[in-house]
Image (cartoon, rainbow, N blue to C red; front, side, top):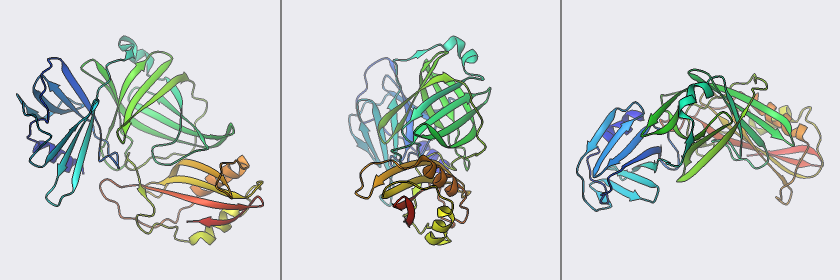
Length: 358
């Protein structure tokens, strides 16, 4: 997949769809390829007066287009969309399929202690609360994510809480790099097990107490602000996605559990804590290419589909039992789909698990 994307860039000879006359540098970071998939790459686009440059995080220039002054929104097989803070390039292939690159203007209003970066980050832990993981929907879990930096690796821990009670915890150790572009500071993280894709985060605030990162998802700017913390404990469970992008949905193919719902009900229902009420508990999760499970989300509803809460011990039981399921079918892996988003909706009647879908 990466080779194909680079090939597109290597043949990417066009003039931009607007006239650029300002003298200062304009730097854009590639948020993702494919808006609905959010495939990560580490490219930049820079406009210097009327010239355009494409280069990666190692400053390798893939193409340069100089003295371009054509005011159009397309050329040959490339559509160009320029927004206030973004540039979208859409390549139209011979079979009419499209590949879209979405670049975002680098943020200039930052607060970073550049002189003391090497003193601040190594052996430091920063923590934040997120609404959901990148892979799974969530409405009820409180998810605390922490970053612990060493010299050349980053320990990422997700702690999943419900009513301030720990439901589950998982960790992954990944390589990272810090680098500067035009006085802007970026964090490059490799979270994909199966290839060398890397996602770029712009650091907009960094001091001894705070770390703020910006990344992008479906044209939206996502800001995560971490506060200095301590590494309270180390989870035993490890989980990494095989590709750091939106996973494939389980219903886009036959991906139901091989032993069937009755087996799951029997296994998970056994010794399940009791709850009060009638309704549904949905556990969202991600299955990676090694058939490992992680990145959870939870939604709790009454029988009338209104928000409610159930016994946290039951939620904890469901999550931990789901992680033990091993007999998942094989699925076709393609270059930009390596993982699966799935869910189980448990029906609760008089506090007991009585049914399961899908």
